[in-house]
Amino acid sequence: MGFGFTWLPEAQIHAELTCGSLRQLPLREGATREIPLYLILANPDFAGPGVKRLTEIIKDSANLYSID
Image (cartoon, rainbow, N blue to C red; front, side, top):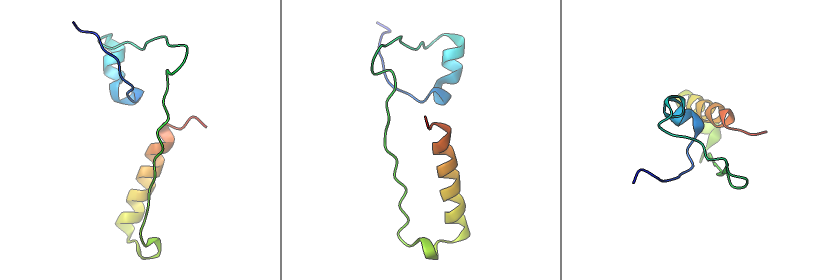
């Protein structure tokens, strides 16, 4: 019937929100969700430059969605 709901990152559905094919529901409670994200390096002292750079990219990307 064309109805449903889900929680998605706003950046991921920006175009759909802009054109109106998706709309944000005006919920009093539960409008946002927090999901813990863990990044674990087994041996950070031995991580190469590629792993270190990927770690920075992941941390920077996660900070885009941070509420703090």
